Amino acid sequence: MDTLQHLDEQRLVWDRKPLIRALYGHYHQMLIQQCGRGSIAEIGAGCASLKSSYPDILSIDIVASPWVDLVGDAERLPLADDSVGNLVLLDVLHHIRQPFRFLEEAARVLEAGGRLVMLEPGISPLSRVIYGAAHPEPIDMHADVFADSALSGSDPFDSNQAIPTLLFDQGVGRALSRIKHFEVAHLDWLGFPSYPLSGGFRPWRLLPNFMLGACLSAEALAPSMLRRWLGFRLFVVLRKPHPNAD
Figure 1 (cartoon, helix red, strand yellow):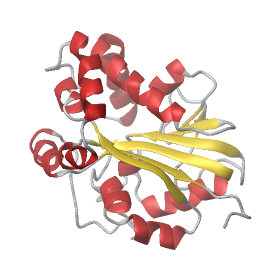
Figure 2 (cartoon, one colour):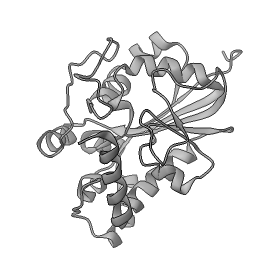
Figure 3 (cartoon, helix red, strand yellow):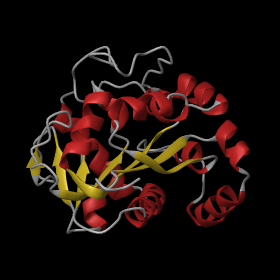
Figure 4 (cartoon, one colour):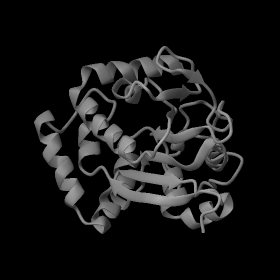
C-alpha cells in the first residue's frame, strides 16, 4: 500500500466514524489549548483532521496530498528561523527517523516563548501489552533516540511507538540537557480506556458514542500515578525560553 492510499483510508475512517472524530476532536482541543500566542503549524498533518477544525493552521507533511499546505520533512523544516509561534504534532514523533534532529529543528523555527505541543503513543505497563498484541506498529524500548536513526526503515509510516516515552518519560533530562533549547511546560499520561476502546483509525469500536464524554471525564479524575501505569497517550508540551530568561 502506498502512502497516499494509506492517508485516503485514514480520511475515509475519519469521515465514517463519529466516535473517532469526537475523540480526536477532544485531542485537538487539548493541543490548541496548550498553544501560546502566535501562529500554529502542524507537523505530519496527514489527512489534516486538525485543520478541519482549525482552518488557520499551517498544515505540513512529508507526503504531498490534497489536505496539506506545505510539503516538508520534519528533520529539515521548510520554515525560517524564529518564525512560528507553535508547532503541533499528533501521532507523528514516533514516525520520525531522527527525533533528536527534529527537536533541534523545532527549536530553530520556534519564536522565543514558542511551544512544541505533542500527543503521542505512551508505553505504560498496560499499553505495552495491548499495543504489542493488537497494534501493527513496533515497540523498541532499547532504541537509541539520539542515534542517526531510531527506526528500522525510511518509509514515512515506519515507526517505533517507544520513542516519545524514551525521550520524555524516561530520558527527558538527557534529552533537554543535550538540546538546551527547551523546558518542559506540561507532561501527562492519558487515554485509558477511551483510546483502546475506540479502535483508533480501524473501522471497529468497543465504546458506544454516547459514553465517550463520561469516559473522558473519568480519565481526567484518575490519579496521575494510575494514569502512568494504565495510560496509552503521552501529552508533552515543551517551551522555548526567552533569551534573557534565568
